[in-house]
Image (cartoon, rainbow, N blue to C red):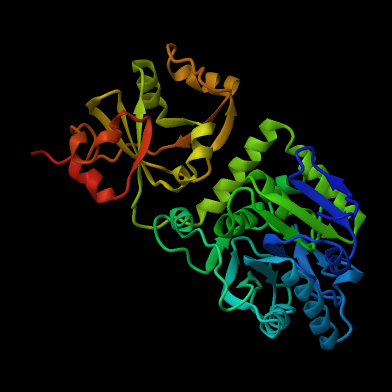
Length: 416
């Protein structure tokens, strides 16, 4: 990439950290990126207060988050955006997060530099902190500008994948997602850390596997962790060595395959969970292979999928109903509504204890399983024969697949 020395580089070279000012560092690079995510200073460290964990706290982040004048903010944003544009591929895009403190300045500088703004995403937080002044509305959103390099540039957008995440409908520019979870801070805290689920959705929307992603304000390295989890390559730049150290530790955690799988599981849940629709449109069809497994399924009311299948088919997290049947016996098909979108990763021992519902069923296929907890079968279809030929074709030999329209499943239960 360049002769600039790295603060840290992962063993497989998919994750690199560099210490320094992003403008100076980027000037030394002879390299271009496929996507940039930037979480620049919001410049809101003005002595204000907020609530965190039920306690009143100061919102000041550090000297790097203070700005003496509006002119300073505009000049700052112009410099780093100019440096980033020079290192962005012609078909690449940039995402910039902010609040009212800086996002208008960012938008103005993007326009001055010739970028084309594609969307302004509203990140609607599901758990915003309480406003303690009682004089303004509660601040429950941040904004993320998505822009391409120029008006005529062709840009990447994984439209089908975003529809899939959003329950089969076009993805909107309002994303309702939680803030950072405690498990994401296992290696230390950063005052403006973003949730992995948010960055995962951004990365999946505008890149493909193997693409290079830049974060000029690395922070705790969330962009890089999401990149590594989903097969992208990453460069993060930050002036604070303490933040780079947190990032390094977070990346080293992923060397443990069990940790990597668990993190990817949680990220996929957060990334897909907001895409559910009120009217069911997707039904997962799952074949249960043995009488013992079927007995356990009936007693536990739990349908099991291997982790490998979930990771290879992320849309499994978008289903609202599961249609399970034993082998090719359509008379034993059961249509059940999924009661939660938060599957749990369980060890072989934990699954074995749960399998005590049936003395004959001993899970042994994988060292870890996904559990989707189900409600009781829908009464109006319970016990009715299921005519597979009405909805299934050449795919019926597969272990799990999809029927797009819920209405088609209902028709399969209708008596001729």
